[in-house]
Image (tube, rainbow, N blue to C red):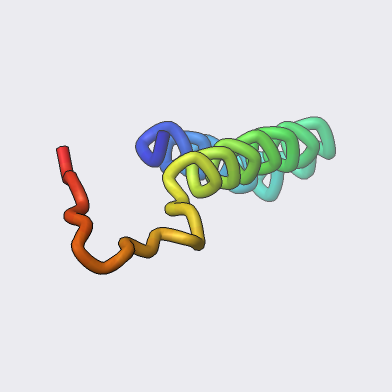
Length: 66
């Protein structure tokens, strides 16, 4: 997921450069759209890999890590 986010950021930057070079608003809206998709992907990835807050182990118990 992180690689996809980086690729989307690079595409968004390319669209931004194209928008500035040509003066076209269409390229700028494309940049905004791609960046929003990348931000959503990054948010989903961060929430999916988050640990639960109550990750405590009672005394005498062992945590099994796979």
